[in-house]
Length: 155
Image (cartoon, rainbow, N blue to C red; front, side):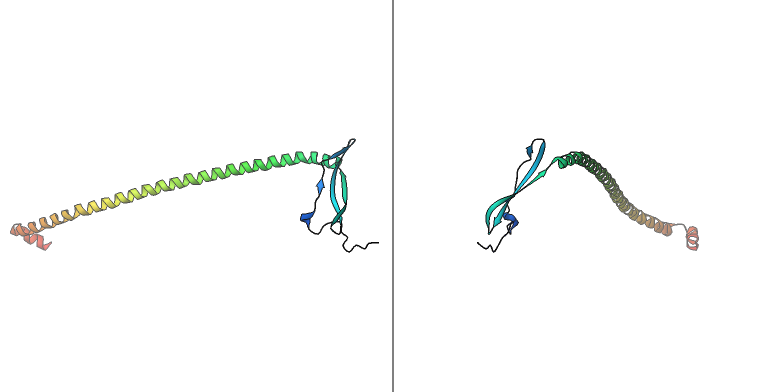
């Protein structure tokens, strides 16, 4: 009798497993799902493990759950579309507010530039007017009749 040192029904590395499943097999009215796995002794395949599962209950459960899956998928898609619509509305609202703020900034900059221009024009107009006013006052003091000079100095 030969002694086996390494008796194992499954290989050590999962990558080397060769699990084969056949499509559902029918025996009369009953469907089975068959799964094959090689049986190994000392690294050599000496047989196959074959497992068959009856699919009647799982088919009924899948049929019932498929309605739930479709309903939940539809619900999730509807929620996703609703959320996308809300995000789109929010983004458009923020963009329109940003455009309004940019327009206000543009108008404020234009008014600021206009005010600076007005101040410079007023300064340029006032300087010559001040010079003319001072010259007129000096001429008035220097060439005023003698009676008016005394009154203007007393005031």
